[in-house]
Length: 423
Image (cartoon, rainbow, N blue to C red; front, side, top):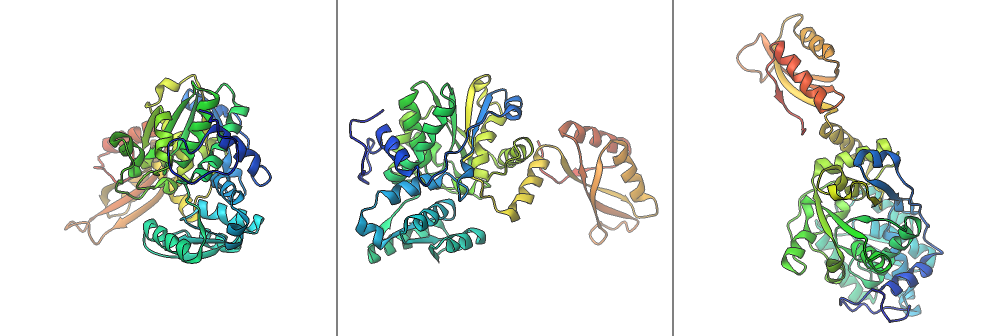
């Protein structure tokens, strides 16, 4: 894969040979002064959980919490003096904006970021604190992107795309160089995939250095643009649904990144929202690492049976982002606990006389579960004024414990309607 073109400034022309191993190696040297050399330690608990020999590339330890700094720094370093003076503009709802803002500040390059109005307030505030000019525009990323294009044309700013720019792709690919320094005999790298910029950079470098390595792309089922594009043979637009992996919520893979990545990908795995939430929970509990949904996608891919062929193999998970909104984290953990069978909610009817609730809680306690919440609904419980509907949330050990509790309550005469997710 290594091209003959010597390291140096790269053209932004989109074609399949736009990024080579030489470009990625040059980028690694170029950005070294500003980018953390993050560790890639083995994980005993995740290895035991998945049956693979797992190592985790902890790029969430970058200053702004994600791998996006690599591509941002490389793109900024490659600007000529006049472009540095004018500055850059980008559309981003989060990590790319943070990376540009931070490295623009370090390099003295003015940065303008256009963020959709739904962007997390903490990321908006952080970008401003880092010195970027932040413009909130539109109800979608496309609205923000359109304004960024207009600003670039009107003000003569260089536009730095978050994933569809060869300079950015080369910067992201530097992660693979570090992975293969730390785990030179890795059998597979699992890459979270949205616009395919990280996927392209990692695949180019990894396959050039270790041709037999497997590259597994993971995308949320709510934004499966890579799968659709591979089926069509070209980048295609797909409808988006809300997803915990908001960093991967891209409706169309890049025109530059897709032809670079597509020939090098061995597998594509799509993961659902329960799996993402469960992976966030597992990483918090087992690795003591808080990740955003996009990063958790890598573990989510290993939790099922779809990658059974990797069991016993050396597998590297790219944990490339830790910027989960704290207001969201509690809900995500609760959802993960529910998906894991450790929180369960059901509805039933009890007598609205003394002792009715005690009989229910005694049955729950006898099954070894713990009551977290009971909500009474007397108003809409039907014509029987001597009974009441209750919604009960309980803490359980696992799905088998839920089944045991259901059986115990049924034996006690309670008719149950589950109201929480579970598998």
